[in-house]
Structure formats: C-alpha cells, structure tokens
Image (cartoon, rainbow, N blue to C red; front, side):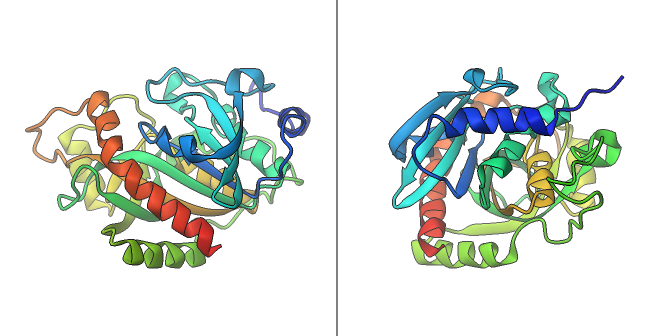
Length: 278
C-alpha cells in the first residue's frame, strides 16, 4: 500500500528548524550539483544537517553537502539548501519534495531553484546560465507526479494550474539584473528525466524536437510542489556540458562539478541582484 508523508510530519520538521533559528526567512534557495558555493556567502549562518531534521532524507550524490544554511545574504534572510535529493536515488517523490512542503510551513514566499543541466540547444556552452521560462515534466507525465496521492487542502488545491509555474515578474527582474551585470543569460525550457543515466544522442534529439533547451534530473518536482503551495518561483539552469546530439562525446559527473566553478560566480551575481531588487 502506498505511503505518503503527512501534514503532521511536515510540521514536525518545520518546528525542528524553527526552534534552531532566530530569523524568519522569506526566500529559499536550492543549490544543485557543484553549485553549493553560494551558501558560503551567507552571514550569521545557522547550519543544520539534513540528517538531523525529522523525516528529511539525505542525498548520496557527490557535490551535495546535505545541509541547510540559514542566515542573511546581504540584507535578505534566506534559507539555503546546499544540495538536494533525487528520485533516482530510490526516494519516493513526496520525500524528494518534502523540503518544499517544510519551506511552505515555515512561511517561505519565494523559491530560487538552481540546477546543473545538460545542453540540448547546440548554442549553449558549459558555464552558461539559462533562465528557466517553463518546463517539460517527462518524469511527471509517466506517473511520477509529486502531487500524486491524497491532496492536503491546507497545502493547495487538488488540480493546480501550471501555466505560470515560473513567476513572470521574477523573470523580468532576472533579465534586468543579467543585463546590468553583463551576463549573457539564455532563456529556455528545462526538461526533467528520472536519471541517473545520462541521455543518449537519440534522447537528446527527441527532446530538442519537442522544444527543450536543457535537461536534468531535478527541479521540476520541486517547482510543481512549490507552485501548488503558492510559493513564487525563479529558476536557473547552469549548463554543465555541451549538447551531445551525435554521440561524439562522453558526459561525466566530474564534468558537471567542474562546470560549477564557471557557473557559480554568475549565479551569485544573478541571485544577489534579484534579492536586492525584491
């Protein structure tokens, strides 16, 4: 019989975190593979290991530090997830998105979500950043929608509209910040697969045909749940490798982590500029 996390469990996790912090973060930031460097810039930081938090699962993936960093980024009180868990690690989808529900119960109003993504668009280069304007949820279309199961009315409605999962006002702010900072910001559609295997050239050609620009193994479940819960979302993909549409190159996780060194400085400028604009 299917099991699903309950509102009580979400509140137990939220209460655990709330008892250990002295601020009320309104913005949450999720840092993907190799992108954890931004968390080091949080001041007056309280660090909480995922393993300490009731019902919160941890990631086994290199490049994910499995901790919350709660403090100030410039003058904004933030909750930063340094790493995330993935469906391919064997977790249920409600476990993957549990942190978003806890954020919701903590009063988070804005989520900035980042990921390391593979390029589908041949013009994208490693180290580039893409503003996510929409997503394709292949993982959700095949039965693993994170909203599957009993709907909890306190968290959101049964059938949420997803036409504006990524906040249009926030996207406009991001565009202006990128322009002012001299950052070339791609815009495109992120597609989520279950992983953990990287895509075949045929996979990539198919995804390009249906309109995707970058591909990864995260983000979409989190965004779906955040939007369901009324949290406004801004999303960035850091391009970790070039499109391999003809099978001429080999993609590795090490390559993904190395690309993070180029991506993080750009994300820092984009996210800090966004927070200042808020």
